[in-house]
Length: 298
Image (cartoon, rainbow, N blue to C red; front, side, top):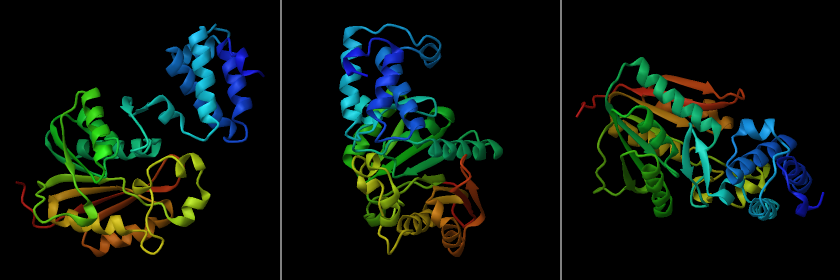
């Protein structure tokens, strides 16, 4: 159909389906269109589905056309709109940060589940490689009694994360540092929980990925050397040994292809009660481990 004929919600779905058929799978087109219509029109998703004949303003029609043209380049809808939702909260996103994903919501839920099981009303959490701040901010919002810190190497990512902390009225301590090359003078307080979704995509993985990820999302937050795919897990586990309080917990989002290898790496470093958990799609995507070292609860 002609793009100029996007006069109703139904027309938008038809035009986007036609315009994006060579780029995305049908379910992805549907989800992308729903997000675009919701954001641009301000309609609830329930209204969009219940009233597809709803008329759009000329301004809205123009915006839908502009967004579709950008989508056809492969640019993710979240970057085009400049925002997304994670764990029920709004987040600003741009090409300096990864787009938060549902699998990471499962990691956040696991951390909160563990806090609840331990009946902890207060404590401290460090998020390593925070990006948009989605993990740190979601945890602080839901367990406000905890002090939450968030570390990243990218100053641009930290600025985005800070804007998201303000957006969600959360108090987070942000730390600019390279976890692979921490300076000796960079003092970071000990934590009860360390959580990280570090870079873990190899060159082989990259070949299988959609260009809307590899061409637009930040490579420093995605890729690792083929020769050392677990570099961040090794370094962060070593860091955790010296920076977790006694019986502190370490949480990782992981590359599904390296589940058992990552478990073994962490076990070799003395972590106990290691659990490898699958995501909603049945893939090995998360690890939790306990370090029962002699750290003090300071």
